[in-house]
Amino acid sequence: MVSKAKKTVALPAVVDLDSLDAIRDGLLDAVEDGSVSVAADGVQRVSTNALFMLISAAGTAQRNNFDFTILQPSAAMTAAIERLGLGAQFKGMMR
Image (tube, rainbow, N blue to C red):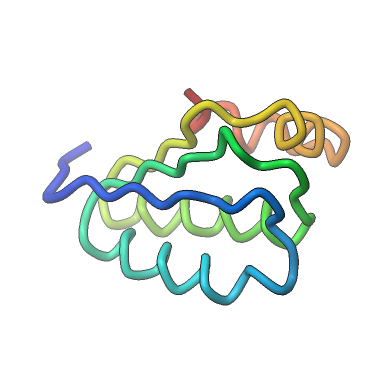
């Protein structure tokens, strides 16, 4: 994939409905400009909606020919992904 610029979006410890708007806005800006890395090592709790938002952002990045990676997802985030059966959707983006 071609990369114009690489941006990093750090997820907060609690990724829930209260934090989604700010995260979404940051991701939207980032996936329009270039490749995106999402720092997820500090996530302690993540909502289902947040996981779907990350899948959507990855799709947008792919359509724009940019890389989208989730760096060092925490055990809590990985457990939520597996519990919801979303492992296949996240497989290619987690590093």
